[in-house]
Structure formats: structure tokens, C-alpha cells
Image (tube, rainbow, N blue to C red; front, side, top):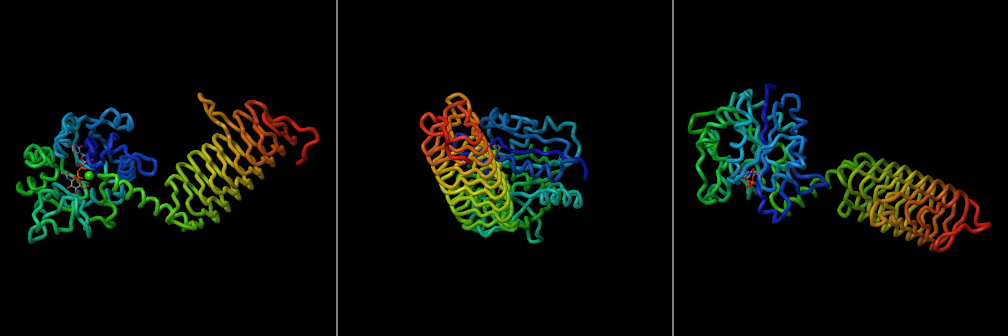
Length: 422
Ligand code: UD1
Ligand code: CA
């Protein structure tokens, strides 16, 4: 594969999002929208990519900050996608090769598709190769117009279509490969769209066509790849597509998901086989759950939590930045934050770790085999030794560690002489 440069458009205001947050930073499965296409790009052509330029504009500093590893150029006036691409001309002045242009709001384009587009562009010696898709509902997308010989002649944006053009199902996904010289000479000829007062990148197709340049296309295998994220509705759609996908993959690996419709598992989570996830369970972020566990119903497992094999987590239980070793049971209405729970521990209903003292987050360590009575509160930092018993309703105060194999009780919790031995 010869040298390829890439321009990623991320300057738009994202007006339809109706949000203060730039569109490319909107979260999909706790990741910024832009990270998806960047990952596909990296997977497709990391080795032959000579330059990657991010075009930023709306809240440029915030976007740049989130993607510090990329070179960026600011589009000072948001004059449309055509103008945005032009901004990269200076940075690419010495570059020789093909130029990929992609949009930051198309998270589902696969690396294989990007590779195929570049391959076809080179093979056909085309001036422009674009990604097309056939959609049953093409509304909102630019339509691809072809002549009687099936040659692409033009892309027409939805708002400029006639009723005859509206029914065209072949749409422009928003991924292009250009011959560099043709790209910048074509952009120089774009005229501003009267309705939108913007320079449309898509108008370049007609410009190149009129100059007798070769335009080809690749068609998406899966129409989901075409999804452009413009509004909060699209954002929810994207989240849901990934959610279903994640659950399907987990089920194929032997995880029981009792009710896929009410279960949310983040794409970064890992779950072992024969674990049962009961309804209304939310697993957020980079969570790892072992084999043969039971989670939920109504459990919320948050980031940086690790759960070993054979653990039971029941209803209305929230865990964050917590590790739970094998055989432990945490079955009802419990909050554990920044906790380290040993093996075969029993955590009674309503147990709470007070991990935040107003300034910092502190750890609660509960060692192997201890028994925590219902309604116990741990004011962190605090440690419960192995085989200890904490009586129901105790408040174990800051730094007052519970010695191993002893029983504590009361507020504040004190060692009970001759308490229950474990
Ligand atoms: C665009 C395409 C449309 C295609 C659709 C696919 C154009 C004119 N239309 O429409 O044919 O079917 O994507 O999803 O390109 N941007 C800038 N600067 C600007 C304006 C936009 O960088 O001044 C960036 C945006 O951040 C975004 C991309 O360009 O990443 C596309 O802009 P958007 O407004 O989302 O275009 P669509 O209306 O979706
Ligand atoms: Ca879009």
C-alpha cells in the first residue's frame, strides 16, 4: 500500500446535538465518538499512514486536548466540510500520495472497509473513490446520482434533493480517497451552497466528473456502517447497537444474559463463562468478572472493578474501583467504593463503605473469611482482619482496624470480649 495521508473532519458545531459538548466528544460506551473511527483507521493502515490531520473548529481547544496525540488544524470559520478539508492543504504541501478524508461522526465504518476503499482506489487509478451504502431509509444523507452507464456524476445533499432524487437509496457514507492534486484543485472550484452558506465537500464529485476524472465507489457490506451520528437520537442508536453486539458476543462465549433487553454491559467489560447476569444489571467501564458468578438483578458494577470466580452480587448493589475475591457474597443493597474484599466473605444487606471524606477517596480492606453483619458502615481508610465478625449496625471508624478473628460491635465499633469465633 502506498503512502496515504488522512484528514479527519471534527470541526462542526454539531447543531442537531443541541449540546454544549462538541459532537465528536459525545460519549458512546464511555468513549468519545471520534475515538471509534480513529481506531478503525489505525487498524486499517497504521503502517502506511504518513500523516493524520484532525480538523477542529467548534471548541477547538477542548477537542485538541482530548486527542493530543494528533496533529490538528483549526478551521476558524465553520464554512462547511469542503472548506474544512481545504484547511489541511498547507500541512500536506510536501506530501505525495493519496488522501483519505473521513468524518468524526461515523463510528461504525470498519477497518476492512477503509482498506478496501484504498485498495480499489489504487487499482482503478481513480481520482476519487467514495464509500456508498444502500439504505431502506436514506433520509438525512447525501444521495449518489449515477448516469445511465452507472457512473457517479454527483452527490446531492438531502436538503437540495427533488422528490425524484429523494427516493434514491444509494447514499454517501462520508469516507473518501482522493488523488491529492485532484482533491485540492477540485476544492478550489467549489461554490458556496446558497441555502446553507457552506462549501460542501460532496460538490467536489461533480467538479471532478466535469473535468473527466475517474470516480469509483465501494459499497458497505453492512448498512450499520453508514450510520452518521448527528443527534441525541443517533447517539442512543449507536449505544444500543454496541450494547446488543456486546451482549451477543458474551452469550456466544457462554455467559448467561437472562434478559438482554434490560441489561447494559460496556464494551470494555470482560465476563467469564457460566456467569449469570440477571435483568436490569448495568456493568460500566473496564470491569472484569470471572467464571460462575451471579450478578443482579438490579446491580450496578462500575469502572475498575474486578470480581473473581464464583462471586454472588445481588440486587441494589453498587461497586466501584473494588476488587472481590472468589466465593464472596454481597447479596443486597450495598455500596462498596475503593474496597478490597477477600475470599469467602459475607457482606450483609445494607453495608456501606464511606470511601470519600470530602477530600480524598480512601480504601476499605476486608480480608478472607470475614462476616459483615447487616447495616454496617466502614469509614475508610479501614481494615477488617481475616475471619473477623462485624456485628449488625456497627460503624467501624477511620483507622480503627478490626483485628483478625475478633468480633466488633456498636457505634463506634469496639472489640467484643469472647465474641463469635470464626
Ligand atoms: C455529510 C455529507 C453527506 C453524508 C453524511 C454522512 C457533506 C456536505 N455532506 O452530511 O453527504 O451523507 O455526511 O454522514 O459533507 N465539518 C467540519 N467543518 C464544517 C462543517 C462540518 O469539520 O464547517 C465536519 C463535521 O464535524 C462532521 C463532518 O464534517 O464530522 C460532516 O458534517 P455534518 O454536518 O455532520 O454533515 P452531514 O449533514 O451529516
Ligand atoms: Ca454527520
